[in-house]
Image (tube, rainbow, N blue to C red; front, side, top):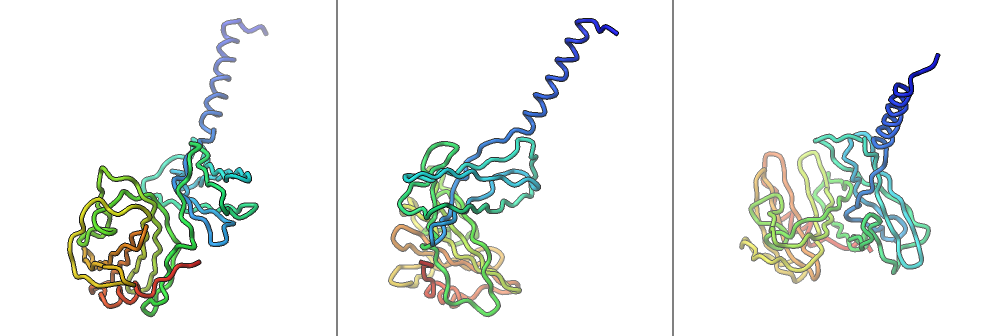
Length: 253
């Protein structure tokens, strides 16, 4: 049977279009990790999973040289998207410790902001029953006050301020939640709202309170702003406990 030339050409075009559509839908997209955390020994790097899919995590490509380490995240274009997705963390291991090498965002070629886990503050004291969860990283708009406004449980955005590197770790119990947050960057551009003033290792700290029984303690130590906050079911988190946690904080490294 001989097919008319026009019909055969249309068939080839349809097949070609199908192949192109398949390849396009299954191609991988490069995306910036945004931020990273380097382990205390310098051998592992963790980045937020930037894939929008609930089912398909991103992958991280690592390129190392004696001067720099480049990280690029990739995820399938057809991975889909879901509104209730909470991104996880991807951890990669380097051949040698990061050391003095620069960490590079492979999608842009620019330096990648990173948090040195040796600087993470961990509490030596916690109320009975509290256990640590995983650390979370992010870029946070610079916020009002030393870390947060004293009357809000979440940062208030200062639209003209730069984004700052932040690291938080939760400590969970059956009754409540404690969160330690460090924000790395210059002093805030807005004045804090005044609250009850105490001192933590020689630094002026301010108590505050918010909704859902949240209590806060905010202060600045050199190049970082620190917040310890806590909440309990059915009762306000005791300020004495927050102060005890704050005084017990020590860096990992």
